[in-house]
Length: 350
Figure 1: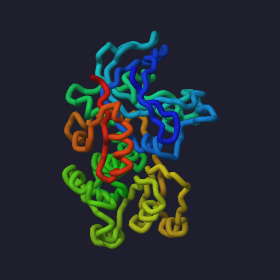
Figure 2: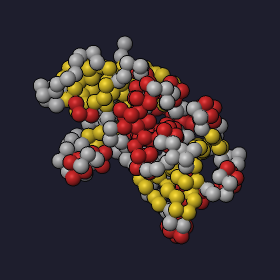
Figure 3: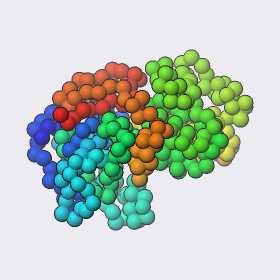
Figure 4: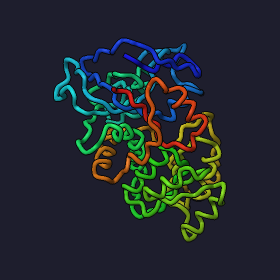
């Protein structure tokens, strides 16, 4: 089969590799579409998390590895202990790799497993014609959802999971800092949980039209001061909840001043370098910082929302490419024009 194999920094090769065989509790899936995540872009251009010298703590794998963890496809074969799936069924999956025995796994919070890994980082992923996934992390795609749309469910699940962690969002004013797919996932998670209004914050106008079409308010911080805008927008009350979805010191610094006393800051961004936090300002108004890691079973919720028309997944797909063009039309395009894209999809099946 064809696969995008990571060998090192900016060294991703489209190669012919063997089709994997499913383990006893796994499903072999023929991949139709795969999404390029921010993590994948980091793996391409750095910093890199794919193990090269020290084997992965769960899988024991090192590079070279097949990239990717967001996808949709169809059941090709099942392991000897798997029941209830038939060849050809449309499915997607949670790409997390978990031990199944630690305290968090036993309590159902496998997204924070002590040995957590992900397809495409700790083991071979979905930028390939076939991928194997643990059967208990597979989700059937509803008939009203296309394969293209289902490939976007994974990052949307991150936003829904974060909203679950925040708790009561009904009637709340929410600010989302970062207008990429994670920020848009946070937007949808907050709106689905009943937020009164959600302001999405970015640094250019490329995302304005999309954000406004899906029902959000958008602010370009190069045009207007965020603190003043939120002060006016909230009638001086500030935001009940602020999401950090970009993973930079600059965006984290924007969060605290626009969060009301007693409010909540939800950090979803992945930081390339350890950030600094102004704990004095945080503490003096008893603001809370929460963090969110991936998701658990929220892919199922995301698929249901897409089917019901509560989420317009097609609106989020800004480019579709073929696997053989991944480097130039995918990774390099995102490095050149990241602000113009929400989700770039790889069409893999013929």
